[in-house]
Length: 126
Length: 135
Image (cartoon, rainbow over all chains, first blue to last red; front, side, top):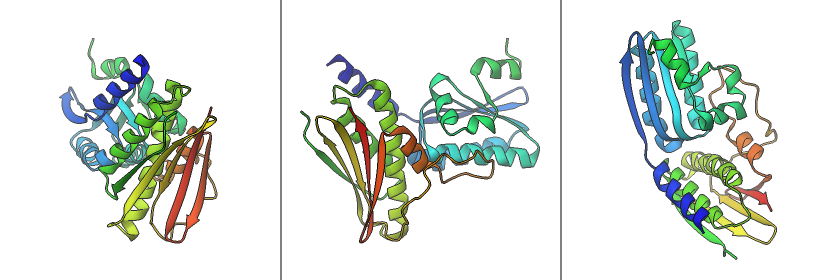
């Protein structure tokens, strides 16, 4: 019974979705919290494209994403392609859970995935 | 024993989390499904629901997608039915080679990789997909 209640609670939490961008040094970092799917794709795509356009070094922090489906993954790949064309640095920040979405599709082989501590090192936070 | 459950949603992007949570809530009541299996089911169902909605939006956006959850002693099934018309049944469900130029086309492969079984049936006006998780 406890397990059922716990899962129900996580369903409620997962509905929450937010995107915020910040600048640290020469990096623009866009933090995404929630579920990346068709419902949130338009907002996510717009944020990823503008974040990349506004910077020379761009990080998408997806470490707090509870779900990233094929629509969300496609937008990340598209952002990577745009970054490459523009000669910009682009990294994807993942956590233990969100990393699995990339590994399952082997996209970890073509994207630069980093953990949050690695991003901190990149942007110069001690 | 949990009885069958059915949800009809409009063919719209915002229906994806609604339908996904419906499946997860059903799965959460199945005592033999572990947390890992429920997580797999969550993403697999999301992919199938998204696929159905995208297909339906192209052909008959005013019609609804139907999601049905069923349970027997040996398996749980999720049936997603759309009226998306001329969609061809997929023949290759392997995860494609990672490619920076590929932004789409791996949703069904993800669903197939996560579920114990995914089967497709062509209907007169759409597709019926059944995802199965075995006990």
